[in-house]
Image 1 (cartoon, rainbow, N blue to C red):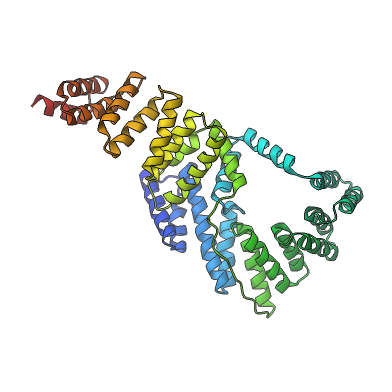
Image 2: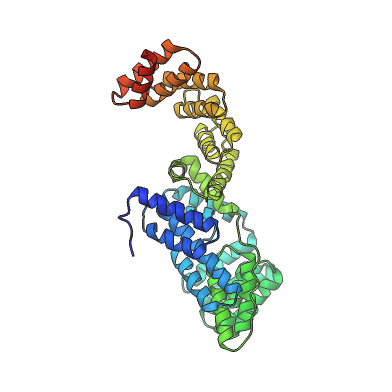
Length: 420
């Protein structure tokens, strides 16, 4: 059911209520609340889809641990249908922006970096994969076999050969390759995942459960792995086997690679930060803006002299209530660009929040001189002048505010007080 016609105020209420329910661990109710706005095309809609999927994932994992495999499958399938494997917030947002074509260059640069980090074995693997995709299966296998002779302990080579065997339904050989990959690197989640798929294809449901569970332990944010685990557990139960699912802590930390992609995007474009700051205040602000603060720190580590990045970091820390960090970044922004109006205004308001009203007034005056000749700024400056007993200066600011906006009720009220 589509709900795209819900107005922004109503959408904000659903977003806030859904966020609150998710934060409280009421996952089914959260999913139902967020379903009202999951068809919106803006960031609020994207985040509604994400947290609705996470709510379904959490409900599914609860059912999985309790042995209610059919219910687990329903919830996890809904989560996977909504956002695929992306249980990581940074990865999800990176994918959202990739679909919009907003940082193709950053994506390409990230891929180049990953290729540059790959060793010689990875070069052989990519060559074999290229041969396979061009229809040269025997040559691809020969390339991998030569690579494995040179690099016998590389798990990626064993995995790739197993995938070639799987594609031809040669599951016994595929299983042997995947087991070799696991033996070479017990922490290789993909090897456990594909081994589990082969076990499932061969009807070895208990073995499939064990391998899927190990893959999930290594990659707990992957919704698809959780869904496959629920399917395997249900199949094992249908065969009369008793299986117990042991799940570790729920994932909370975003992955570094996707944060790096977002950091590169934010270096060039600030619209994601602006869109997130425009979201209604909610119970998930700590997670959302905590992730964003980390991304901005990564961007600033590479570009410490970018005033825009400092300004956005200041705005994010202000949203998080971390005023010391917000002021530090706002000061850095105007140190780089003294005529940065928005940064001056932010620093002025931050000074007001911390009681430094004289400094706040100084920043507001400099913002006006730099081009921030706006009614609300004059009104704010006038109120500060009144607090300091500078009634003449206050009157001038209020009069200028009304020149710029004759219907500005707040300025008119203040001016009337001054006249009295």
